[in-house]
Image (cartoon, rainbow, N blue to C red):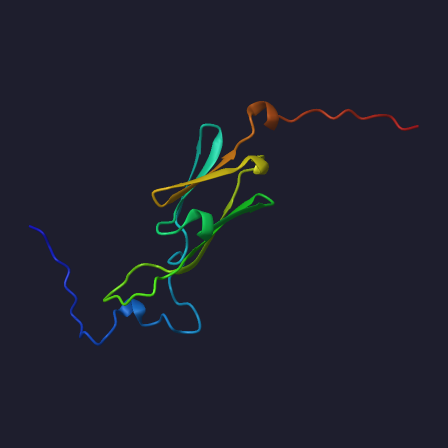
Length: 140
């Protein structure tokens, strides 16, 4: 038997989740306005997939890498139309992920498909990650 969620509150009273939205400080739970990601190692690359539905990747997403830290920043703006209800999230979203040591930052690529951003960072091969011996010269 299918169940149906019913709201039991006066129509003039906003949902509890909206009570604190206009305060000058943020009471939302951590991650509520954060980009959700999946991280994996596959096909010789460290892969980060980020949920970013409803954004234009060419205009609304910025990806930077600095000192081994991958940062994804996205903006989602609300269209000016009168809505009865909206549970979509709008505004600025940022997420940073520490890349594994040895990742080739210059070779990082990104693609966007069906609301998911996929960033691939090539991992060093076994030969590249092995230590090498440094010879010591005599100074006279």
